Length: 139
Image 1: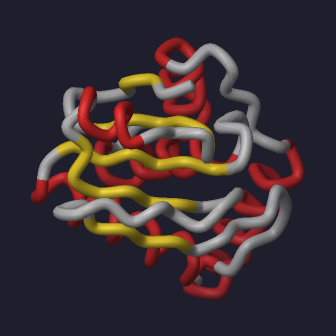
Image 2: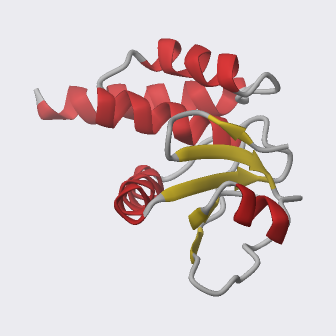
């Protein structure tokens, strides 16, 4: 199931097809779980697996950077195994960091666009814990 979150940004699972890529004019595929991205001519692919729990902050930074680069190229698909937890969370995180949305509001926004969104609580809590630790060290 692929859902459009923004004009250029799509979320889904790893069952996407060549037909889906053509229908949505996808030029960048960002995989964060599930099967490694299938290669299509003219489509940039990036795969960096996330856990449904703690993840290295640099991993998030790399993934968010690739999403931003994908925006410059055109339509971008972010996927994980089921399209429920990791890929919707990453898109919410991109909205949080790049657009300035509150993280909870960004998750809700993605859920409205992609009804099966249900990020793992462990992943959200681990991200928030890491953010707090990072900012407490700065003080």
